[in-house]
Structures are given as structure tokens and as C-alpha cells.
Length: 395
Image (spheres, one colour):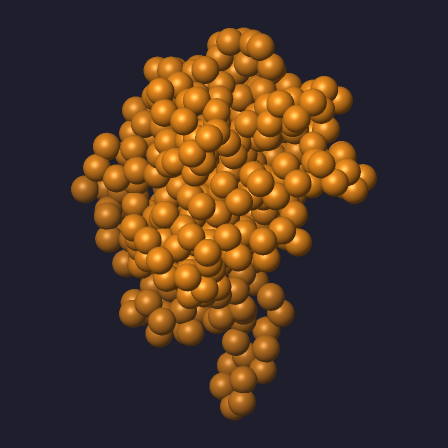
């Protein structure tokens, strides 16, 4: 087997890079002690990661009588990853460093367009974003996330109710984007981001809900994202949250899909006579202006989300329940959500105390998507190193 495809070598590179990612500032020796491989191997691997601009060194730090320790960290500036959230009407595109910090972003409206035309617009705007902001830096690949049911293995959107997409070969249609390209659903992308940059740093067992124009949930157990046997785990659209709500396309009344998405909130505003609301952006604007009727509608929406969260608590008993998406953009509403969960969950206030909002708010869905590609780099750094044949020996 060629050295560069040796599974043991790939595993060692991944362990070293993940250790640096999770705990920046440690020296080569500290990393070797932590992961249990030789200091010489870590030194050689670190040299290659430095040469490939995946990590950086800080100034040496004196450490008693011995040689100064040289702290290592992820290189957040030399290379980029792209994150794309394929929304039903608007797609967000972001360029980030490996640290998940946005460098540049753009929104691409495509309301009323079919998938093919929408994706062509996305490719065009993504290429323009790179031309304007990459500044010669390599884009290591693209993470793409969307709502609904996604077949990651075969690169297709099985169903996205909000967008009206079914059986869309998304990876094939987005071949004009930086490669490799990994497709996943919003909830799993958000969970990956939380593991890297958010609540996953302190709690490895959590359930994450994404509430936007799309809905989804994912369970993380012992730091592992659970997609389910057929990758369909986390479909929360048809959890019943109201006895007298709108009729869902499934034939039942009061499903989360028709009560708590962004579009459902707009529809409820129309039912209340608010024809000045054309889209969820108007809900945001009027909420900020202090409109009491709109604020009451948003509070109702948050209560529907909380009732669904209470059901999930009773079923799965996660260490934390993380809510990402539109509700999380208003941290001041978390107290209300906690109180409704406490009222409806069997565990009462114990469950309510374990509800948190996602750590990311601004550009969150696109940054969640970028984390898919960050994970790919961490899993197999050798694939992203340039001039692989010139790598020094490390085993």
C-alpha cells in the first residue's frame, strides 16, 4: 500500500491536527503525550502540516531548564473553506478560515426558481465571492447544507418541503463549486459546528434542533452525530404542537411544519390581518420596532418549538437541547422557551434548565455548512496537503 494512503498514517495525521484544533497552544511533546504516538512522529507530522499551511507556530515559550516549548495552532488565514446553506428562497454563501470565522459572505435570492436555475445562480455568486475575496488563497472545498432529508452518501436532496425539491442530485449539479463538495442536512451541519465551536466543547451528548424555513433535529452521543440507519433521523416536521393549528400536507393538524417555520409565522401574521408582512424579514423589522402583535406571534412560534423540544426531551433525555436558527437570533427569548419546556416536559424544570440557544447567530446556517468541510480536513489532512510526494517521513 502506498504510504500516502496508509490508514495508520492518515489516522496519525488526523489525531495530531484534531488535537491542535481542539487545544491550540500546546507543544509537540504535549500533543505526543496526549495522543500516544512518538514525539518524533508528531514533530514530522507537524512539519508537514506547517508546510501545507494547515497549522502555525507561535513564538517559543521558556519552560524551566529545558528547550523552549513552541505552541501550535490551526492556521486560520492561509486557506479557506466555503459554506453554502441552500435555502428555499435565499441561499447563503460564506468563506471562512478553519477556525469557522467568516471572511466574506453573500446572499443569493432565488424565490420561485427551479433547482437547476437556482443552483446555477449559486455557482455564479460563489465563484464571484472567491474572485473578490480569496486573495490567492486556496479554497479547500465546499460544505453544503439544506433542510429536509438528505442522502449524504449519494449526494442528493431526497426531499426539502420548503423548497419543493425532491430527488435532486445536488452534488452533481453543483460540480462548479470548489471540490471536494460534501452535502448534508442543516441539523447535522449545525451539530458539527456546535461540536467544533459551541456547546459541544462542554457537553458531548446533546440534541440539536434547527428552526428556520426548514426544520430538523440531530442527536449527538459521545461526540458522534447519529444520522440514523437510513440517514432520515431527525425529521421533526410532523411532531404535533397544536390541536387547532393549520392542516399539514400529511393530513394532520398542528404539525411543527405548519406552525413554527419562518413561513408559518408569516402565514399566521396574515391570518391575524397583518398584510404589511410579506416575508420573515418584515417580522424581524416589526419585532425590533416593538410591534406588540408581532411580538406575540413570535412568542407563540417559540412556544410551539418548545413543545416539540419537550417531546424530544421525554423521548431522548439529552444532556443539552440546543436550538439553532431563527429563534436563536433573539437570545432574550430563551427564558420563555425554557419555561414552556419546563411546563410540558415530564422532567419539568430539570429539562427546561438544559435548553440553550446555539452559539452561532450571525450567518449561522452558512457557517454550519462550512463546518462540514472543516471536519473533512480534520478527518484526512493528508488529502489536503500539497506536494504530497515531498512529505517527510513520519512513521
